Length: 335
Image (cartoon, rainbow, N blue to C red; front, side, top):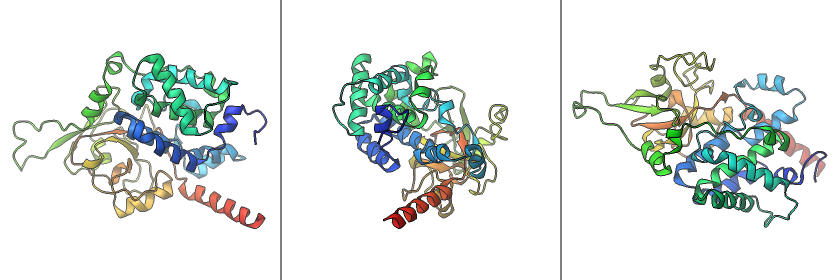
């Protein structure tokens, strides 16, 4: 049922819960270009619908945020145009945002009531307009749809639609970016010696040339990041040393979670403690041995990888499960 103040398109989107979105993204993945397959999934982990709804429906959102130990920039409404900078499709955001607004405002009956079909429809229209491959648009359009669902049509329309990429980065092809993620740099003229530690690069922002740090073979992502002595704290108080936010270094705080854009196969499999803690934080719950979301302090690497650092962290998994249990109990009692 359409709620007061909702547009028809918002009402349509709000019929879709986390499970519906999981099914939708899964159905789109085979059609998304390789450069954005991981990135699209990571974005949906970074901005979970369940958490957004919990904060929106709370009588005191700020009090709840403190209870859940939320730190950093966790409000999507404040980063509508920047939250997806790590998607290749971000370079098309201005056109995508405009197309989504037009789609939302249209009085014409949609060709389908399936969410995936409408995402494909908008992506196809933008791809035709920009003369680019449709596979490069599907991920960013899906991100745009869920962004609108979380922030509302007015906030969505009010954002500028500005993209945040340099001309040099914009000129790179999707294959160039995708292939660079899998490349291990040379180890120098002494690299063949067993006594010489292999050194790799960890890229934490593909859109800037200097956003990388060195990692010794077998070193975890967070410890290696601490060797980067540049000032990150002034930009993000969560970063006392290096670009990855850290606190405990024992997989107990969840501060150092990261998304793996490329090189997941070069990381050690998930440890028992990391697997146990991830659902408590709420970041991911999976049996995958090398998932796309990892805790940096518990993830040794054996090659160059490309990561993306979320703008926030928290401890909300247990809270969301308690809400689900309450709803199930309430529905059972009502029935």
